[in-house]
Amino acid sequence: MVGPTQLIGINISVGDHVTRKLGPLTVNMDIIWATVVAGLVVVTLGLVLRSRATSGVPGKFQLLWEFLVGAVQKQVDDSIGPRGAKVVPLALTLFVFIFTCNLFEVLAIGSKLEWLPAPTSDINLPLAMALTVIVLVHRAAIKNRGLAGYLKHYFAQPFPPKLFFINGFMNIIEELVRPVTLTLRLFGNLFAGGLMLSLLAALVIWKLGPAPIGAILSMPFTVVWKLFDMAIGAIQAFIFALLTILYFDTAMAPDEAH
Image 1 (tube, rainbow, N blue to C red):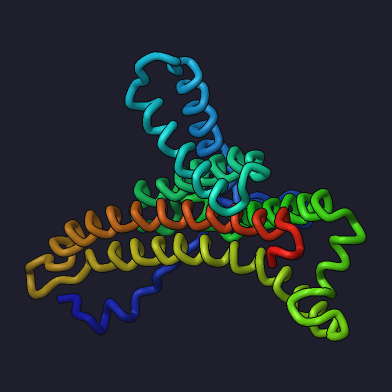
Image 2 (tube, rainbow, N blue to C red):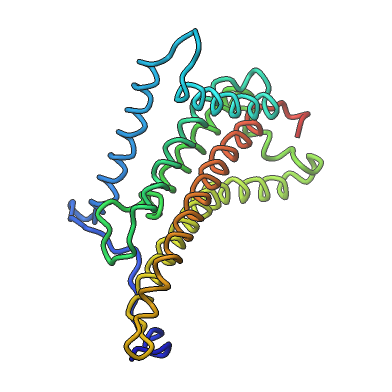
């Protein structure tokens, strides 16, 4: 009989990868090919939509896409206004790509190695996306205010200019924290999902006498958790896209609006 005390002592490993050495770097090959697969899925969806797009009565797939574009467009218009039209493709692409990556979590079984893991459960991909967004946000801010106005902004807000040292310190800390929080919010939720699946997989060995209680309980728990995980994946993709819009709103707004 395997009891609760034995379950506590089980070594549960999460986040193991198929690795290869590339010079001094260790490359997680499973994350790379999972990211490529997710990218191909997104590109394929775009090509399918392009082939089926019509100005007449749209199909269900086109209606879904138009709903997503409309929702993102409304959010951008409410936050940034017409000047934020260029942000819509970026925010929508991020949402679809991240949601696709997060859906790979549904395919996971809680094993030590997943051959198609959710790429967003590895901190490298969320960090790369967060840094890309932040670089584009600063580029938009420089374009909007000019280099002098961009630098001045950090020392003129939120307190009076005579407190420029405090303003600069607070704004620089805020800018450094942005990519960190954007990364950890997405990574943490997906990593927690993988950890939960590993716990459910470990539950299988629990027996009460000859009865495989763990195996019986793990099946409905896993189904419920995967459904919950899908919802979390959609929410996290939406939050990442929404924060991207809000960061561009800050960068593209005039100083008086802050």
